[in-house]
Image 1 (tube, helix red, strand yellow):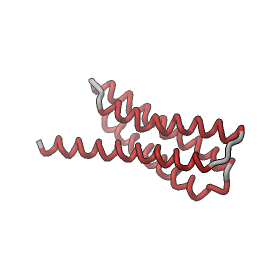
Image 2 (cartoon, rainbow, N blue to C red):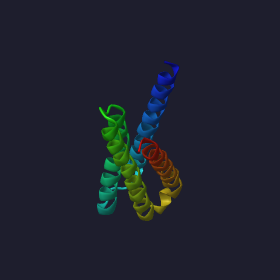
Image 3 (cartoon, rainbow, N blue to C red):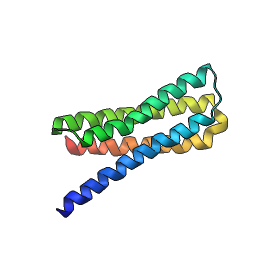
Length: 122
């Protein structure tokens, strides 16, 4: 019974972490100037970063091991995609380099976490 509680708490912590990641992305994007380049980058980044947490939550509610594995792989893919869009956003907005670097680090850490989960669930 205790093991189940630990597992539930661990899942909740990662759900919170992915939610905070998306919130920090939104905060950053609100600060950026609106222009043709930023508008497209922001749109893609918001979608990808939001999908990290959404797909992780879906994985936690999966009905089978196969479904769980599939959702976690999507989650990892979205973390990698978030990293990509953040790199482009940094190129377009070098004045926000410090803020973007923190999010780049988090996106890589999330990708590593989800890669580890994929390996363990295979």
